[in-house]
Image (tube, rainbow, N blue to C red; front, side):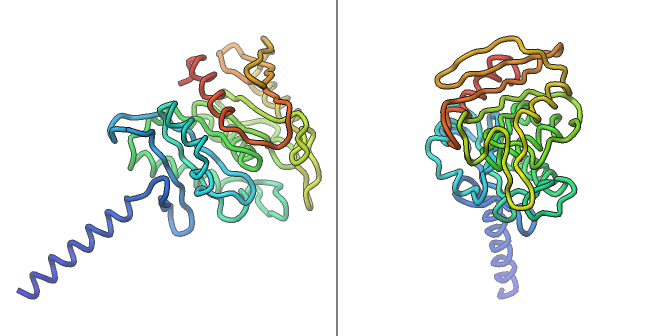
Length: 273
């Protein structure tokens, strides 16, 4: 009897442990390996079954996944759009990217593997439509979004980096296929100036150099200039219908969830999602 009781108790403990491992979300880490994790918020009222699109958000320097989830405005934007919000987290205070301050990274393979693992894990636990994913981020998170755009354009449908580009200089080219990008930046940003600035033993890259590289890479041609709210956008497209838009607002180094909403809605209107 005691033996059977022990088996039952052990089984219950295993079930409880498994349930705890799966019980992750906006307020609890979803563990990836020993030292990485992410957080996720599904749209309010989601039925738990219907696949939804995804916004993958990368935090800025010294940011966190928990901090992103505390942003009520961003949470509301994602929920109102009917999509999941995934907040990723760097190992330390910043992303391990080539030419980062005091870094020895020759490439971004470790971070790219982490993002691959996040999408694989999240899509196995939650009802996600992985064909409708947008990667975005602010400041250092914008750098991470650009890195994903160059290396994982076959994983995400679109990208919306904000106030951040590559460290030092952009790569000479990106991996195919060419993707959809909306880049957003403040005209008078002094923290991450449009032309970059020296940081430690390296420097922030020049936004215009990055856009020029990608414009050439995707054979983009400017088609129009548009305005939406306080954003003025120079819009480009290519023969395959991909878009590369460069949007400026009159301000400094500032994040607004309305820009995430703007990017998603532009992509949706263009049939990207």
